[in-house]
Image (tube, rainbow, N blue to C red):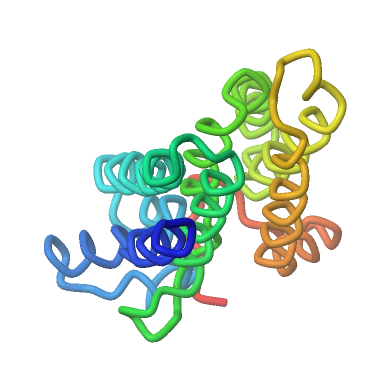
Length: 203
């Protein structure tokens, strides 16, 4: 049942809502505009606030559903929940339906981490949002959220009664997120990263 949950979660995660909304309402492929990323931030740049909010909510929901599906199909197995969440993120990043060209998995990751370690994800998420408001760098806030949640889980998992196995999966999710944001990290270091609200060309 773990394998079934992982497989279904990947297929669920592979539904690219930014692509679907772009095609349905704007007759465009989001991956050919703005930064070229199939995610909420690029949707905001290309299509505006309401489509971006819809993408953010739906992509988050993919991660939440995947985790709970893993738990449901296995009677609450923490490995199944975490593995299914990771599978949904991989599906978002490399979607089988769209030539394996997806996004960076931030919103789906938010849904996964909020489901697995809600208290720590909420706390770190507030810090990440503050960093975005101050710097206007969404990529920086995204990395602060993922890495910060992973570190805080490794430190406080016992106090909050989270299974230690979550730490292993969160490390994998963090490494995956850093890899997907590697060009953003380079631009942050070089001072050329785009800020939220800016119109940018495809990279």
